[in-house]
Length: 345
Image (cartoon, rainbow, N blue to C red; front, top):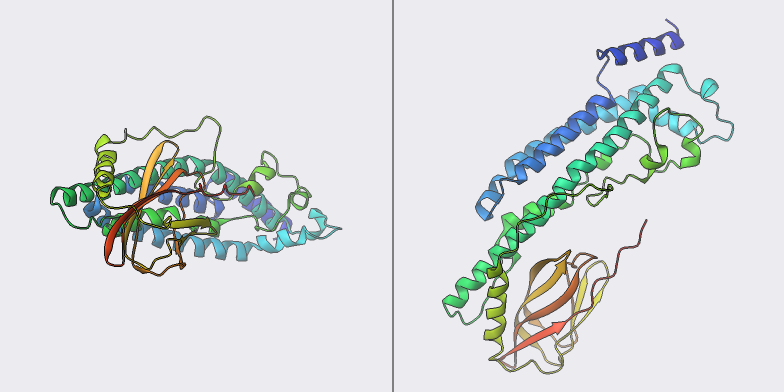
């Protein structure tokens, strides 16, 4: 059978739904796996349930690893990456430079990738909402521990995200997934003027090139349901912590200076060697308040330390807490600059 004839057979088989497993099936399974992972997040409501998330997460990673390997083997078998590379030639002619079965595989793959690029956005919007909800759960957990320590009149109130490692791990894990990048059908380095050398009916090539598998991709009029109203007792716990701290003398020397690199860089500008630094970094994102713990047993004068940076759209950033200078406890409450906005790619 000629290569042209085999290409026609592939097209007929694909249309009939009985062809070999290919991009459409891979992307369908990837979308289903991603959706099931987001469904599992809805059952995480505290530190204990967060520990159970490791089971669906393990299944998801196993499925994605299997899909990525099958996808790699398919592209290798059908020579699709080689076909895209040939398109970079100045004298490229699809009729002369590509076999018919390779053209069929490339077209089917691009169309499947176009549908996946669109549909995954709906799942990502749900995922983004779940991450925001889990951040609220984490903050409520921290506030509850603050409240308990205040009720016990603990000499040092010590509560932060590190006290809830399972919750913290779930948030960080799902917020930094990179598995979808391994299912990119079009090579990442392909430019729009190269892809336009071959017409793909019904496929928006520009949209494909702009798709980055990001969690914050926006589709007009596509919004997730609003989060539950923030419980007032969370802010009340922080307010009472501040009130208790006000009985201490203010930390001399101004406290801390802040700047942003890839992280938040805080420098001890008090002119004193500090010990037992326990602080809360507070900020707002889209009307939702969040907090993260900053704790250092020893912080020499002038020394800079790095911490996770608040999101680029965070506002009203401030650092408050207590520290000891020369063995005497003191308080600080400092407004910090907002993190810089991310540059658009």
